[in-house]
Length: 374
Ligand code: GMT
Image (cartoon, rainbow, N blue to C red; front, side, top):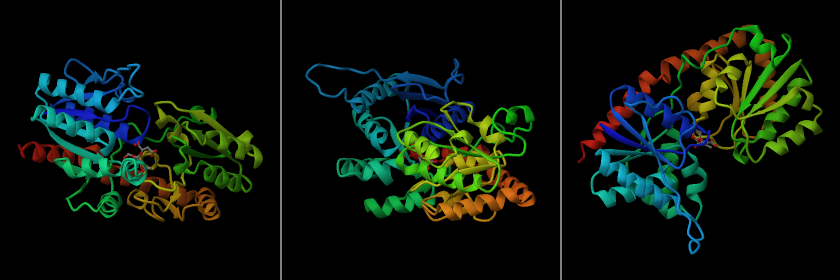
């Protein structure tokens, strides 16, 4: 098959899933063309003469236009790629803007099929805004096939947009060879003393991630046991989280490390992953932590319970219940047997339920079915 992929290039779960899926699909012998304004961040080093290929959407600014209209430019570049390479299927990660651009290119070429994967923000946040509601519903209804990364998201989409079409659930996956426990004590020694518990949070620090709750939970934990917190990523709520860490007197034990691509090193040395999000359609970062044998304490929000099994691979609490999250964290960190057992269960779940060898074939079958609609 010849497949075009549209996704966000910046660090974020949907871009990660889109890129790793595209790489695996290319390895399986298909021709994969990424189309976007920038190369997806995890695609670096994967392109070769046999693909995956990357086609940059050209920007255009003109004094009369108050915006560069990137979706129109994306539809235009995608049209060129479809015509030049005989693309049979455009896989859009996100209803808006990517499925909208793909549907536009389908209309212009009369050739390709459109498969859309919903990741969350397009449905639960931005897509529901009155400014985008009709466009999002149109993108979902007019795609040839739609998948969602959790059962929660599929059902929520049907409810809030009132769409009746089938939405296939295909969970996200994790590369369990890459996301592994790091046993070299020298790596861990760079971030924590041997007697300290190492807690970690990875996100884009949008308000929905509730980074302040991470700091609140950590401050309670650190008042009881020696501990350190690593905050990975960057975004609008980072300054507030920093300020709160100062106010609560834990800034010396909280390290804001910013964004970097090999997040697995930090996850691999950590003892506990915190994900107190207000809303999360899946929680890919939690799955990556589980693959590294790290127990998770998270909010019982959206699709998180489909990933983190309460009492088995971590503990869940109501959104904002930082006391319960801190109690759960202390329970795991104070009980070596429970900690080891939960870490092992997390890795087992990553391998037995979320391995690429289980998930990628589900996408390939969906591609085949969608292309055969022609
Ligand atoms: O969570 C984010 O802010 C990033 C966003 C994205 O587009 O990368 O994540 C969404 O897609 C991920 C991959 O499917 C999911 O793991 C995240 O749960 C989802 N985020 C939300 O639903 C808020």
